[in-house]
Structure formats: structure tokens, C-alpha cells
Amino acid sequence: MEIISFILICIGILFNLLGCIGLIRLPDVYNRLQSATKCVTLGTCSILLGVLFHFGFNEAGIKAIIAIPLLFFGATVAAHALVKGAYLFGIKLGDKSVKDDYKDVEKS
Image (spheres, rainbow, N blue to C red):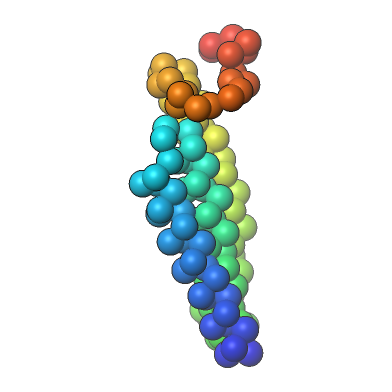
């Protein structure tokens, strides 16, 4: 079980690192939020699964089980709200963006 937890934690660290690199390298706020949400959510959930496999079903493992769905749903909803707010505030898409899904929707 320690090998599985080590692999999951390493995968989680790799996803978090890629998310941080995406925050630096991507061109606009919308792409940066996508990178931060997807990579960091998968990375942190992987780390929490590694904690669960390492400690088992004791106090730390139960907390990891509870934290995974909270993080998964909370981060995605928060990122969607931030993107919608940035769009309504008038922050433009990047130059290389291909499609604007909100263009035809009323601003409310």
C-alpha cells in the first residue's frame, strides 16, 4: 500500500506543478482558470487518495475521503463563477481564442 500511496502522491504533485506552470504560461484569465481548476483539483484529489492509502481508514483517511468531493465540487463551481464574473466584467479573451460561447447570451 505504501507504493500505491507514493505513486498517487507523486502524480498529485506533478499535476499541481503543471497547473502552476499553466498559470504562468497561458495567455488569458480564462485559460489560466482552466489550468488551475483542472490540474490542481486532480492533483490535490490524487494526493488525498495517497493519504487515504497510506493511513487507511483512521482519522486522517476519513478526512481525506470527506475532503475529496468537497474540493472537487467546490473548485469547479468557484472556477465557473470566476469565469462568468470575469466575462461580465468585460475582460477580453486572448488573441488566439477560437470560440466565445457567451457572446450570444444576454448579460444579466
